[in-house]
Length: 215
Image 1 (tube, rainbow, N blue to C red):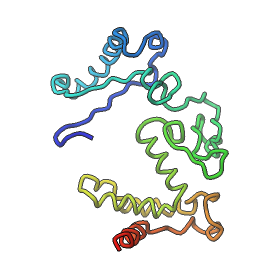
Image 2: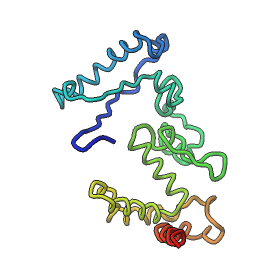
Image 3: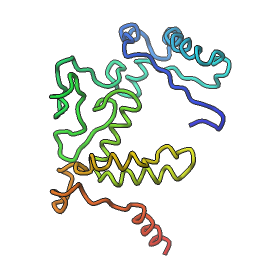
Image 4: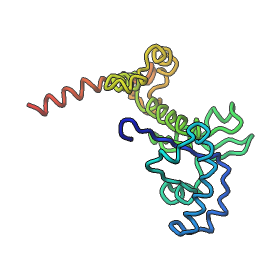
């Protein structure tokens, strides 16, 4: 997302930013821009502990706010994820509701075959957690073999993506989940009692499609 030799730094605070001071401001106004600069100071001071001259080296920056999240991300009061009181369970929490004190909803919905993923689902808020929910959704829709194969192919495209290779851990992970992938309601009758649906070699299928198109 940036030129070679440059870096992107994404810095954010805890979820305790009060909304009330923001809702009195008008996005784009001078007061709004000044308040953003005031509130971002704590983040700059935190980054400066690791990169003292960060402000001098900065080429581009953009400051988000609860109002920006509300406008562009459609988040209620600019929040991230969902909050559930301790001791209560979110709707559609499934078995997690019996194990965790405040579980997020799982990826299932009342509509068969319709899944969800993101920071409002298990495992929760944050980039790694949201990405993990996407991986769970992928495994729910297709056999885990397809997911691992995709990661392996991506890891071979460029040395930069070598870390994506599932390797040995992928082989450890596969037997733990393959009996549940894809989800039972998405399986064909042929594989209902098997270890998930049969994996599909999409690389070979795509090669066949491209060869047919070339002819």
